[in-house]
Length: 424
Image 1 (spheres, rainbow, N blue to C red):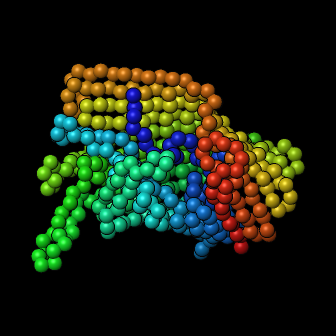
Image 2 (image 1 turned 180 degrees about the vertical axis):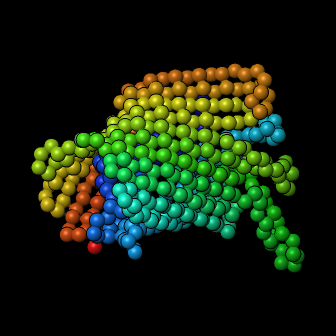
Image 3 (image 1 turned 90 degrees about the vertical axis):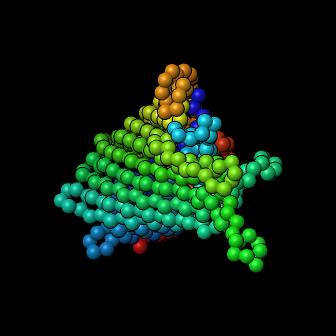
């Protein structure tokens, strides 16, 4: 059975964008200009005759304006790290019982991500009937010190402590998009690298000597390099917009094996350790039920596949599902809108297969174990609520409940996301 997860949410559902990033209550069925630019940089040309500025909790600072006849977008501070694989890995050439887990790297990444300040620049223009746009992203985080993290149980009791040395994260990405009439397409590429130092040297505490004390990283995944590709196409027909969304992600790992004497170690390369692919086909529409009441809907078919490559084991997992999302927006007054929504997989089939080989390199005799199950009406996120206020050229949007548990009502995540948007 496949036991290793991959923490990359955007692979799990297609283009979860909202009326604004804060109006998560519409369950991914709508998008505003900022969301459109995230999906297709060519949309930066749709700003009209006004500039838009947004400041948000979790959304950072975003600006869409024009300069010298070009559409210009700037986004800073919105987290966009490519997350860490989770699991345990070995590789051919390593000791027989060696296994490196991703725990230290994953826990350190969670801590390091708080320091991130990603920056994205978007530039676009119009050539004849074609709108085009390019988006360039960059981020770099570094700690010139050891980082100590831990895990605790539900009562706060310490379970384990993890020490990492000189962690870094760097990433870059490029997206190109076009809009031609009712057809649009975006092609995106990104690469992110998480790294840990395998040793740390400090003074031995004796000022009379120049000696230093060197400590080494525990057996662990010490680095991950992930490459991401995405193709998104949309086509507008009367009453609905149809989309195809394809994503592929591949991660290479470095495995650190500290020697028994704790005086050094060996680092191994694990190429294509984890592969993930998602294909989604679907459509969405919005309808006016009555004055001041709008209904937003999206339905899609998703095929998702994960592949783990280990020294003697090949693990594969697939998930095929039909899902639907629905949200409603009610104008309670000219200055306030209330929102609610939900999304769920109506039916799905999951299958996992694990093949264990006789010798390293997945050669020789093998045995396989396959598990298959069908599910009906599985929630993709908690039912949500939100509110939006409009004061002239200013808007405030916020979530009222969004905790991922399926609970209705007010939770500890009240006002979990808040955004202020200004047009000028």
